[in-house]
Amino acid sequence: MKTRQFLATTLAAAAALCLAAPAVHAQGNYKSEYRMSLVLGTAFPWGKGGEIWANKVRERTQGRINIKLYPGVSLIQGDQTREFSALRQGVIDMAVGSTLNWSPQIKELNLFALPFLMPDYAAADALTQGEPGKRLFARLEKAGVVPLAWGENGYREISNSKHAIKTPADLKGLKIRVVGSPLFVDTFTALGANPTQMSWADAQPAMASGAVDGQENPVAVYQAAKLYTVGQKHMTLWGYINDPLIFVVNKDIWNSWTKADQDIVRQAAIEAGKEEIAIARKGMIEADKPLVKELATNGVTVTQLSPAERDAFVKATRPVYDKWKQQVGADLVEVAEKAIAARKQ
Ligand code: X2X
Image (cartoon, rainbow, N blue to C red; front, side, top):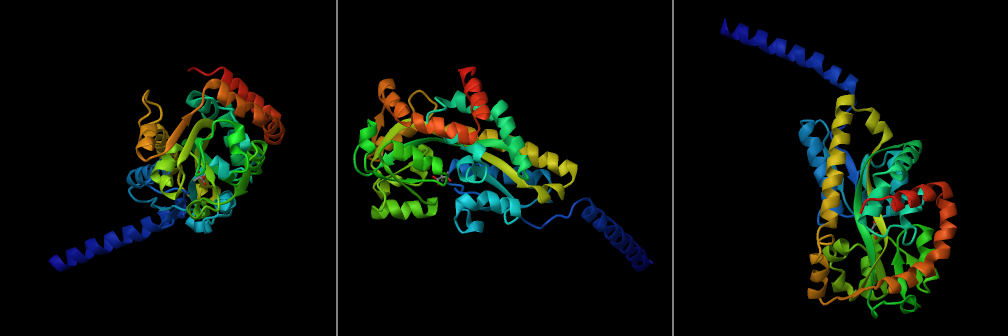
């Protein structure tokens, strides 16, 4: 009797499972793992943002959407400027990516690399959280991906192994590693430097061997990567560009999820983006800038520019700004300039 009852219950449970399983599949063809691409791993604010997103999604979907992090853009062998194409093609399922790395494919994203467009954090927020951000997300959707939220790599400051940079003349002849977009080559050429394009993976050995003299990256990246150990002893805080990050999902993957799960992934991205921005700015927005102080304890010479000194860099790069305003789209740049002028400080 007991055995029969047990058998009946087991059979009923098995039947229910058989019925339920195809229903789940019909709703969405879920993979056992989703691959998230990142340039920088969890030692950096960028990677932490990706981890926060993945954890929230895993928890809130009870593991239905299980995300694995692939830092070092390892799904595309470290070639960060190919990330956007790989995302579109489905080699990558989702990413927290830099606008700088995607700008070779989406020219409008060069907006953020226009030299000295964003004078402060409020200006960066005015772009990502305002009309320019909306337009850029629409542009990305048109390109076939699903953008969900903004994060931030940070204001990019220049370091080098030779001497303090106080004027554009100090950059003359310095070999500077830059990221993917040709806009960077124009900017550093205008400043009299000798720019060379290189992935982040190649940049660190190049600094260590002295193949390049300098680089530009946020202070948080410089610190976490310990660039003072590869000869980068001089840093100038010029804040010439801010590098936002975008939380994004491949379109086919997105469409394979239920509406409820899409909502969870989007909401988690928005929250993770906010948290990531706070992490990225930590140490830089307090009055005494603790992160900058840390540089000094690592033996780095930190150069702060007076407004007049900074202005010399703005002037020297203005022709590049004007040229690339056309490439980005004069209309979008004007919307951005207006958003910045109207920002709350
Ligand atoms: O390569 C860089 O400099 C980095 C890590 O900041 C980016 O991916 C834009």
